[in-house]
Image 1: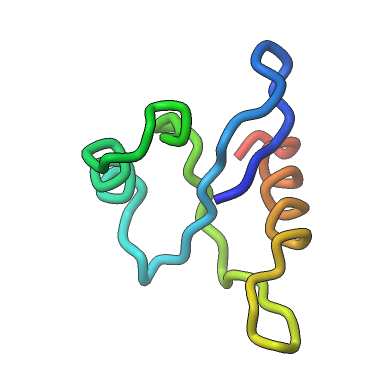
Image 2: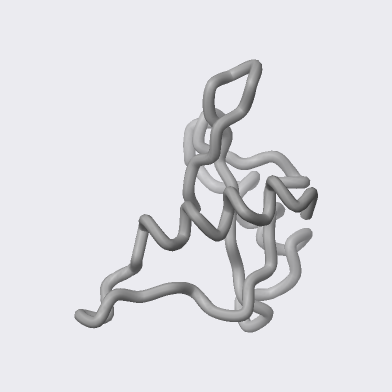
Length: 78
């Protein structure tokens, strides 16, 4: 999950997922039923499928690359 600019609210959450994680409807249901605050729950149309989740050489999540992927997908209208 990462944030991308949104004109009205300033930023919106976007979930990047791989096929192995399930389909976006299933993921949305899991998150929407969780105890997370509503502010941290992405909209149903904010799930973007990617081939792989970017990682650094250390194996940690590459947050910068993840954000770039989300911005690119949003700008392409995905």
